Image 1 (cartoon, one colour):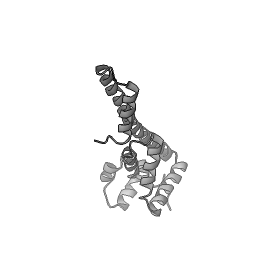
Image 2 (cartoon, one colour):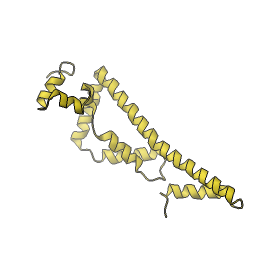
Image 3 (tube, rainbow, N blue to C red):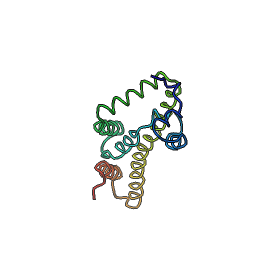
Image 4 (cartoon, rainbow, N blue to C red):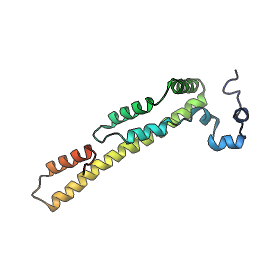
Length: 154
């Protein structure tokens, strides 16, 4: 069996029955060949679509469980093999850490959306309170956040 460093992208393209240019169209680097999977977008979307009443960590946990529940033993074995290889090949390890940084940015966007919704509630209730000074600001914010938490029922 040939190792990672000894295997060329030309050999990979030939084994896949595609040209090297086609291979690079889908996988910009050799590292991408090993590390690319469809799970990160699924995890981000699963986290994004969790119920509003969940906190960020709980939403991420539920999202991860939802995606991992769709994976079979072969999917998990493939993921483990890629991770093991990334631990011993420095270029793969660096690429994997870069992918993790991208996922962190995407999860930050999910959490920022929640923070934006909470801030939007605070702003709108403050404006309402200024226009209706006889109302209870604390009760308004609490009610508006409860609506947000329950998914904004109509």
